[in-house]
Length: 197
Length: 103
Image 1: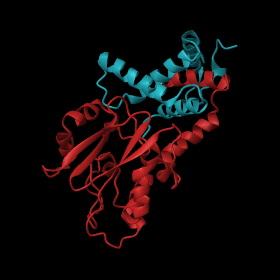
Image 2: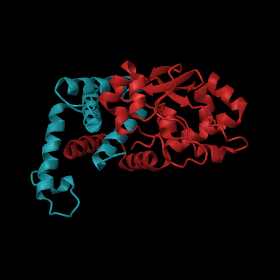
Image 3: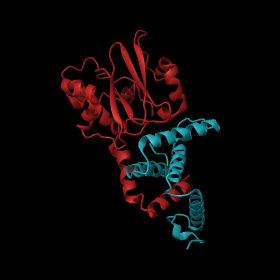
């Protein structure tokens, strides 16, 4: 694989299509600067600022962009909001479309066939595998991402967090809670649930 | 996130070529999902471990489709890198200049 990548890259560099230094910057950005902490800030802001939450509902792309997280692939962001009645889960059944600007690059299981195919057929079973069991009356909605539309789950604010500020709340927001395969941490629970690699 | 450096390079090349307008992002997603389906049909367990293999295959196919390069040129260049890698002493950086058959 390494030789194939070197072959392609050297041709692209010679023809002026890519600049090796720019590639390094891109890799560094995705490895170190973009990740689920971005999404956690979006969620914590929505929990504390009703007007921001409304903005997210109306135009998530613009609201998220206002925090400095914007996509480069022309994708449209949609935020799906968990309620006591409805739990949302995100998948990309065809490949691995994922809201990079707010979550970074997807975990391996998100890209794997078992998750991509099973979560649509048996969402409750998949969530149980993640250690998440929801009340039977909770409806589960599965959202299939595309190249054009990327979904971010807005989890419910955990109880017992009245008066918490945004930064403290953001620490409760896990990556999986924004994909829908987990819930936010409970106050004082520490890092436990939803901690798949 | 990236298990080997080549995965990161392949990832970044796709972003760079998209930014340059070589292909659109929906076109990219279509190409990637087609590679994943092809690999599944050929028996790939598709557990996410081979994800960047599919990514690279999609990239190679798209650059050929858009006339950026050709399969013979890619093959020849792979062979050159292979010769260069074999001719480079262990621990030294591999460059195409080490290809004994290079110009």
